[in-house]
Image 1 (cartoon, protein in one colour):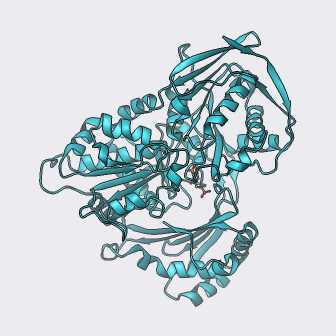
Image 2 (image 1 turned 60 degrees about the horizontal axis):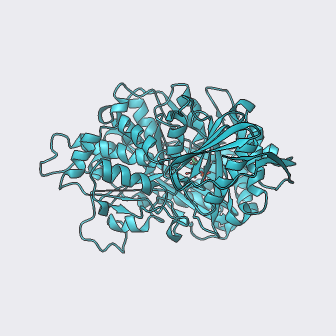
Image 3 (image 1 turned 90 degrees about the horizontal axis):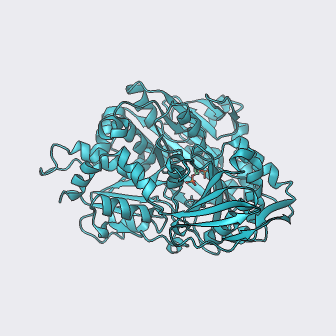
Length: 582
Ligand code: G16
């Protein structure tokens, strides 16, 4: 057994180690500066209650992006230095973000104890590789991202840090399952490498009716395709869709996890999931005659998802509403009913309408999955989602890409259950159109202006806040741009009071609310690593069944014009078009 002594290493603070919407995300070149990662990790240990560190067990893993392997070894040694008793690592350092949450909540060690938290190494949907992004975030004992009270403390610690604790231990082989034991100052410290998928697969099998999904996938009428964009989701897709559910290997695209995501942008949307989008008949470069009936993609760490039908895009806001509307009938985990539903503020109000029809508790929270955790821990929310391709439930405390795909497969299986061998399949498009006919349609789009000069982005936001002081003035400008749109009846900056712990989050997005339920929302992203990203969210509700089948771009054109001119987007940013439209 190797042994080691705790070492105190002197260090000095780095600027800018403030966790964003979901952890600290920076270029690899920033993270690989001597002591940069160490400072953040030590600041995290120092921000946690000492019983969650000393003698505790931690999970350390991630989406396998470039620099993960080195980072895992550094964190293992620092965990030993800070008195952690044992570290769990997914084989090859791989665990999807939802799988980390599942492991923290479900996995029990030989001594009967669980993990008290996790370092997740991911920059999510941001590209990876030596010139791209790395990221790290801490999740708590409930399996969810650290709340703002902890992330603020971490940041404060990073500004004052003087030393970090570590132990010179030999590198641990993380390529094979097994336990390595070390002696650290008379006590034992263990590193347990385990299969990355088994805990998660077990959990999924306890939530969904795998037999009905297997039947659907074996029907010759139903064709299926999943794109992991070379993220960690590939490892789970193979185990679940192919090995457990019998899908063909050829239905998996880009399912070998790669450190640089094959040079791509592992973000499941219509812009970046090019291959899947073409295969589903949704792009000009589509060469295949008959696209599959169902297509889905996940991001680098497999917490985001995109759902597609044949030549048909399901907006994330519609996706969560449709899952909520069908969950009780189609998914065994929800058979006794939903406790409540929640969405982030910029997500469309499609979910609100379902909640009202089904008489469910409903919550609107700021952007950031951490805000759903409190509601779930208090038993107030079962299903939640975000416009940013995040969907999930209280089975864990992270959004969950593979779960969302299984939820959709369950709904399709349920809608076809009496007709699996018949001639007409109820398709994704049928399900969505029926939903719109029942609940009305929320036309929705998001414009992203990436890597804008940070000062200019702030000026644009400040000018929008200034405008809010006079609604008559706003309406004068709006009507001058387009006389067809409804009156603006409210304008504010979204502020949230957590109904469980009473904490208040301010400045969570600038809203312009129209009389007919339409909304314009402006926010600065908290997940970019360079410059600023301005997000503009545009939504319009249509109840009239004769008007729910328009092209979204046509229906939203007047509001888009109003948003761009009202915000003086081109004037401030110098951009004539957004980087990404979803
Ligand atoms: C994170 C958060 C999400 C949020 C998203 C986008 O997701 O967990 O709740 O919606 O960022 O945030 P922003 O608009 O600030 O960029 P992920 O998938 O990046 O971890």
